[in-house]
Image 1 (cartoon, rainbow, N blue to C red):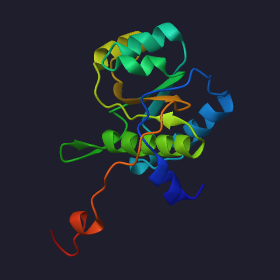
Image 2 (cartoon, rainbow, N blue to C red):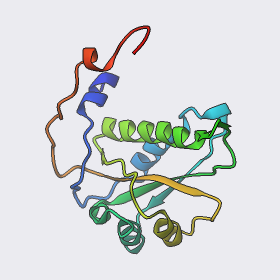
Image 3 (cartoon, helix red, strand yellow):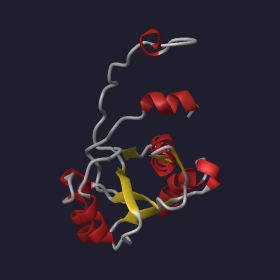
Length: 167
């Protein structure tokens, strides 16, 4: 699939088939995260692949119960002490954002569904997965074969979102 086609076809998927995701497909999307750029190449991330049903339930109870129905949940963590900051803006949030976007696009290329999750009770997720206190849980996504085909959402035109040489 061509890159722009992957971008155009990617959708947030909230319904998944029960079919397991083969390990080679999980590794493929994780390899995409590994190759993502990061501030000063700090690679501050750590990804937790959750396939255990009880652990998936606990992660889902932290805010998005429907994600437990996906065969896999990938949780993106970051070590805030590794990347730098510019002013008061920590780079680890940007780094995880880039890596997660690599993940969701690689998954879409392989016919897998994802849905970027940024809202949850971080402490509940940390407790469920044994994440150390000094590590942040930044995002997660379910991963599996889609059991729905959402239509394209309306997008603004370039003229509405782009200007040159000033706002």
